Image (tube, rainbow, N blue to C red; front, side):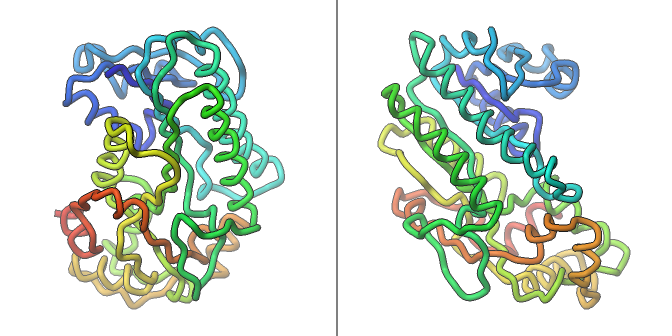
Length: 306
């Protein structure tokens, strides 16, 4: 295949590029920062990879580059867990997903021949937060800021179906691997200062990055895969259990909690990402026959921290 990827230099995107490269696919990387992308994916190591500059929220000549692609994977979006959610920051988070997806769909609709599939990221923030409810792909959306972002994000992606293109929306849980959220949690444990964040009762719906990449590959290659799927492992845990498992695997104590007010002081409204959670089950994903390599947290952490 020839696959166009946005968000390629991010944690998940770079793992996907490595997988596509190993399997011999041709890759088109759409990026705001071509210099950085060239460092991450040097031409000598990635001879089948082309880098094209684009502005995610604007139409442009970059859109025509999608014409000869078989598939598009749209992973781009401003990080949600970094910095305070000022009104300007919230607008950036929304626009990067809503307008970014709108422009990708616009490109797909106007080129010929068209890609046959769009795999679009979303997030389990779609469901809102709860300590007691359990969510699957049939559950209604929440009404907080992140839920509204996910609704707008998915609504733009859905328009690609008007162009006769298959759509797969993957609602990402918290992705575990050598990077991402785990990279921020490990240092305190190394210093014997690790522990649960906030109350510890909040749900932590996670997925190993290898399983997430496998899910994306399944979406790309299986025509019967269509619609919304939760990209989470089948066994979510509470934050306290995550901290306990992380301490066990790292041979470190996990008794020193990080108080919620400290996270709120640092992140403001953005603290909701770590202080509140949701128990999300991948019902439709499991029904496809997808086989998880890491269905329980302990095995995932052991592989990552080996």
